[in-house]
Structure formats: C-alpha cells, structure tokens
Image (cartoon, rainbow, N blue to C red; front, side, top):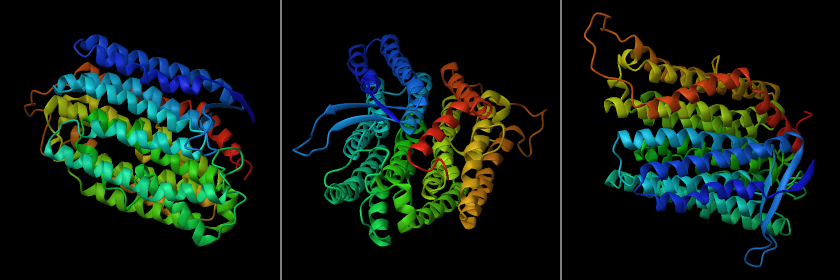
Length: 500
C-alpha cells in the first residue's frame, strides 16, 4: 500500500478542538454555542469523508506531529488506514446526531452546566479521532488517556454523590489499568524491539521471540490495560458510568469510549502481535475464552436488570466482547466481522440509548417495569427501539445481521465450534432481554384498546429526530454495506489475513 503525507488527520482532530473556545465564548447564547458545536461536527465529518476515497484507493495517510518525545526515538504521529477511517466515520457522523439529541435532552431535562458539557463533548471527540488515527503505540496511549480525562467531567456532570462515586470508579478503572498494564507492556515492547513502536504492514512483535505464556501475559496486559473494552473482570466502570446524562451514555457506549477500547484491542492483536505471531504461539486462545465468558455472563446479568440504561450497559459489555472474541479467532471472516461490528453496534446501541433518554424526558420513567403500554403513546420512540434491538440481536433488516454472520462463520471456519455456540447462545439471550420490552410496550398484558390512555406524548423533536435517523441508518447499512465491507476487506488484507 502506498503511503501519502497528509495534514487531513490533524485537521479532523483540530475541528472539534478549535470549537471549544467558541463554545465557551458563546456560553450565554445557546443558539450560537450550539451552532458552533454543529459547525465543528460537520467540518470534522467532511474532513473524514475527504480521506475516504484515498483509503479506498489503497493509500495510507501519514503525518508526523512531533519527531520524538522525552528523548525516545518514537514520534507523535498519525497513520490512517481502513480500520482507522471506518472508526472515524462512525464517531464523526454520530457526533452530529448526538449533538442534536443532546440539545433536545439537555433542554428538556433542564440540565445545568450545558456549556461545560458541550466543551468536554468536543474535546472527547478530538481524542477519539486521535486514537483512530494513531500511527504508533505511544500516540495511541496518549490519546487514549486524554479521552479518559476528557470524559470524566461528562460522567460526573450531575455533581451528585452518586455521580461522583461513578466518576471515581470510572477514573480508577480506566487510569488504573492503563498505568498498571499498558505502561509496563509498552516499556517491554520498546526494549524487546529496540524502540520499534510504529504501526505498519508488519506487526511490531512479528520478529520477536515469544512463547505461549509470555505472549499470553503480554497480550492480556495490553487488553486489560485498554480497559475501555469492558472485558470482565474490569467492567464495573461501565454500568457505574450510567449515572451520566443519556447523551453521555450514548457517547460512552456507541460513539467514543467503549469503541476506543475494542479498537485498541484490534490494533493490539493485528498490529502489535500480528496474526501470524499469535497463530504460531497460540496465546490468543486465552483472550478468546475470557471474551466468551464475558459475552455469556454479561448477557445473563442484563436479563436481571430493571433499569433500562443498566440493561443497555450490560448488553454493551457483551457486544464489545463479541468484537474482542472475533479478532482473537485470527480468521479472515471473524476479523472482518469484528471490524463490521464496530459500526453495526454503534448505530444500533446509540438508537437504544437515544430511546431510553427520550422515554425519560417524556415520562420521567427509567425502569422497564414502568414502560408497559408506552408504545401506544410513543410509537416513534418504541418503533426505533425495536429496530435498534434487531440490530443488537442480529436479525434482519438490521446491519447487525451482517457483522454477526461474519463472526459466526469465522468461528466455524476456524474450527472453534464451542465459540460459535457462544455467539448463538448470546444471540438468543439478546432477544430475551430486548424483545419483551417492545412487546410489553405495544401489547401490554391486562390492557385493552378501550382502556383510558395516559396523557403522554413523544419527547421533543430534537430528541425524537436523532433516534429516527440512527434507526434508519441501522436498516440502511444492511441494504447498502458496500463501503463498510470494502474497508473491512482492505484492513484484513493490510494485516495479512485477506487471503486466508
């Protein structure tokens, strides 16, 4: 693949970063403040779109920002490949929709400190694209930490005792694991490779002598260090972060934070170790079974949750483990499925969180047991919830079917029948914790069409329109997945498994 020097990756990161002073400047003018947020979102998305044809043409975009850090021969650098551009497309496009939703939600719920909210929201998106475009392990780590710090004020936005406790758990898990695991793993990799940390067509550790257990320990240090992927037992921060406003939950679960975790996991497997190295030493099987355990246990816990956002949170833990499990199988179909599931889960899960927030804004209800019959009064919201559920379950006509098909076929083709069964059992559990919500909303037991209806209406248009847009995307990407498939193919080819 041809490498091309380009300033576009830096411009994409700067687009939302430069909006922050304007958001603060217009803090007393809601319209201008929100206009700056939207303008930055559209500019960022436009820059990412401008890079897409170059990546589809087989090029790699590169840019060195700083030649070396702290005397190390490791630059701060960007490198945009198929995986990075796919993640950037998801994050930048959904930021626009989430911004519209946040305006409706924050106004409808009469939230305080909205300027601070939008400023840190913009900063978190800059950090997210920094991770997507990172050209080496050091750059990836720095932007990963910046994302943790920039999202902490969003998690603690309500400033209640519960919010502060959730924020402490959030930082302790994410900063604690990265310092305890990633830094030693980075130092070991730097020493072992003679200072080579750059992502390229050849994996960083491809020529390094590693056995099964040393490889397994190093692999798990990286994976658990990038704990935003939510693998058990370092998953408790994710349900705890549900004390945040719903737009933040949507950001955490669909747009930025957790997707950064699984993005890093894919980078570690394919660009740090490499498929050939992990296949040779066999260490990936440890990661596969930890991910499989997380898939099943999180799904079972989700079944027991009455709080809708907590059910969605445990569902997210399981869906993230799908991606980690897929890439750990080291098979072409499974790796492509993992990449596709980043986009599929993003549009489906953000729809579900938007719906949860719209229900709360319109009714004040946040428990599933309180939502019986609400589908009659909020048909757009619960119709979108049904579509989002189909996406997470992996049923037509939703994009989740495409990614889960690749994951299941990858497990079967790799000869891992037990892990294939894990995917199938989890899919049934997904249906068990989502479909009854929809059924009870539209066809509640004990209520007839002649019964008096509660005086409930849909949430404000700024809340309902985004969830309709993301529900539409969930279906549209099922019928028009060409770009996603092309990017998944290019990535698989770039890491050396496109011919397996």
